[in-house]
Image (cartoon, rainbow, N blue to C red):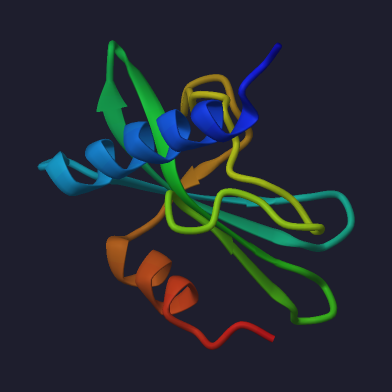
Length: 107
């Protein structure tokens, strides 16, 4: 039988360890076809850029945030896909831009 609580606890521990030990962080933005904006904070891990924080700002102005502290909800979840800035449709942004969105009050 699959132990979902154990799996969730392992995911939380993995993303938390990455977040707390990161010395280099990369920040990206992506505009989707519906007019939403996606913001990502990623850190190097095993040769890839692993997303540790993700925020979605919907066209209606709602903000959904995901990290080790809040992996998922009814709106979405923290991606498990690495970011490749050379192949993915993302643009690099300043850390301050990411922080402005991340610290904005959620609707």
